[in-house]
Image (cartoon, rainbow, N blue to C red; front, side, top):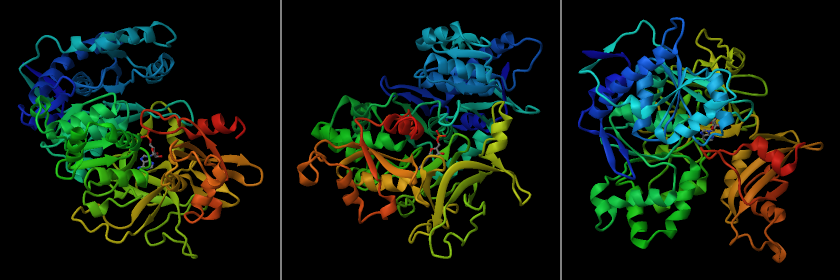
Length: 573
Ligand code: AMP
């Protein structure tokens, strides 16, 4: 007998791939799973999960749209779990084992998860989380058991009157408690198809997956879209720079066992911190690994290397290009609520420095001047004095989420009404400018045309108002990072009576370079100001400098600037 799946494009795609071709690889053990196995295992898991959900439901509620939280390590079992939740028309809520119990309880309560699926590895952690402090206790089920036993003969895709399943990701919660972002299956499909068209994933691609799987970057860009395309996804998580270099280099070593076992990686998508860590660990590798690693990431072998989720510093982009014999990082911009929105193009000339490129296929973008609420129409990118105008990025289209989970107030606040009769615009809270760049936008990629977008930062933390001027923290960070003394930089606005906000820099210095500044003293605020004098207008140059040992970042390499300001400059700052 056939088992039924909702008629979703992701299942059509998976069923249409060569069943013998490799879908998932566990990098460390080199265990491989084909697309055929994946479909069979999802089918088995779906049947068992369906019964578990039915048992957990009372008073005849329907399974469609029920939240299923899961705590499973990155790898094949994660993929099977996610897809089997989609197959049951449930909403998958991926959890991270790195979250403290209180955070996991918050998500379970907020999402009102019906069940928590855990892998054997995280069973203890899951039991501890469920032990106490929950408003409503979900049932606990072990993922490995879902896949045991046999399935039915074939999978039948059936049209449901209404699909209610999808994915719920929690925002990083820098401003308030994390909010559940509901991405239903049609939104996920639109996001994946947009990237598929833009970045041309193929069944020949092998993607090295280094990212957490409770974020949009790891789930949509690095998992769902390659599954749509029939690419192979190799999991190597948690990130470790030496392990990544070893893996990348393996197929290019003069001769070794590893050489035969490992296929070249063609696709890498990561955050700037990961590229920085790879760059700093490369010189420490054995000489033959260094050479093989350079060959691995060269344009001959690495078809696409993408950076995003935080601003890519120009020195990082340059250093990667030098190391990789000319490969150029493609930068893109996105967020949990919208998937990916802007991206540079595949042609090297379309990977414009400091820019995140153009609106991706299916994404409508407008910039809204924060001062006067005016839409910056095409052609009005500069004011009367010739100064570039900046505006909030607002987005609409099939790729944009529809609501925060059970939070109509936040949903209402984050969308702006349209005056053209079209759908509402999502207010991203990010500020950008737009300009034509000579030589860019000439490729055959139809969406990569017109003026390029340049991100200035988040409205609330990165746009600093000082003495009546508006300053982009990201622009100053770019310049700071190009100084040899600076390893890491965060520019923040610190409340100040005279200036409104004072531009201030929090830096990690390179100990070898920063030992001496002018007059033999350690490199300090005056040295920094002197070094920036010819690069930035006076009011943009930080007035204060604090040196720290470390800039704390989350799993996606992002700095929480609100808490950084408080920690470094005190609670009133
Ligand atoms: P998240 O929802 O956690 O993925 O965070 C999304 C936020 O990351 C955006 O709202 C931006 O502030 C930031 N972001 C993402 N990509 C970029 C980029 N390429 N450059 C600068 N900021 C970025």
